[in-house]
Length: 292
Length: 123
Image (tube, rainbow over the protein chains, first blue to last red):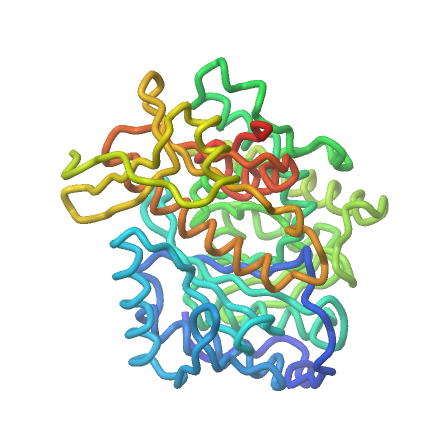
């Protein structure tokens, strides 16, 4: 896979300008994950991600690190020093997120980096906030940004998550996994995250329970899937599902479920998600790659 | 696999009362692994080998006007969860969280795939 910017998406949709007063979306986030040995070293990858994000939102460049943010020069050496400082404090038991932002406190754009243990080893994640409206949230701009972030980060998957969809899709299996670890006396305090959520009739395994290098963790408004993931699901099946838009980008397939941010409280959007999940048989493919 | 562990004093009245109720222990619980990873859990329940993290006061969490702060807090929770699990696994503890607000608890439970379990024990 090359490390150039994605080229097969709509030209001219990046470099969007926007008003400064558009609030951050409460529900939407974009997340990409990789294995530590994939792509460039983490500091270089993060700087490349910041560059991609600046092409998406020129008015909100990443200029701060930490919380509250302190100005940071955007180069790998400085990012590396900041990451090392966070790691040192974490080892001493003082926990702080790895945060980069466009503004010192209430930022228009926040970018977080983290690590997680999975059944197949460690993964590194980068996730970011999105605006609640405006040109940066238009489909073409989001697909371009998603592809460029995944390429820059060396990701094996990217997905635009909606918080309500997250609990509706993963809540049930997450609850089962939690219940299996707890003493019986505590089970009555385990909440049901799906209570009050629209039922999709399909449950997926959370990313922590599958090999996400091979099978996608889920379907967001926009999903970025690697060739390996697409082949595992069946290329023809993926390409012929009821997507709003599909675009290839540097070893990935960028898939948009709906023309607007998918809202599972909206019956047509929920139906579209259900149809695509069924067409791909994603739940069954995930079960084949289940790991704990 | 422990290098050190000991009870540690607490700092906030509301949080501490909740930690005492949830864990059944009157003090925090500091653990350091041989590799130097350290964390101050919000309590230890010896009968179940549970080490706890508890949170109170997150009624603002779903306020749209605080979306950026919510994201910062979520990322901090992620980092705390990862460290808490890493230490617990190395020391053969079971790690669990509890948050009275069941919506926040449900969100974290889904976000983390059930590991660690996130309970919603009332205050």
